[in-house]
Image (cartoon, rainbow, N blue to C red; front, top):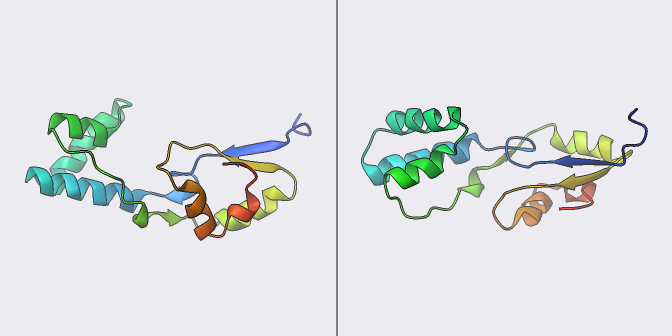
Length: 120
């Protein structure tokens, strides 16, 4: 059944990259901007996520926040990703499909995994 598979595609956020510090930084920014407690902002965002909505976007609308950039400098590559991609790349072509900010390819290069990826 799986012998015909030629490609495997990955997302980046929360798949190859741990974004929990990115989110924490964003929620701290929102708390600072609104003068509300971080825990309150975090809990409010979770309520939106549980409704399958983007909590940070919804909070931005609710509090009329200026457009913010994500803190990609806080991204952390999961430790097993290079090994996993190296093994998979021996048998499959690897692609990346993302809704990330511009510069994803250069971040993948910075982490040393672009050599295993055929398409971004």
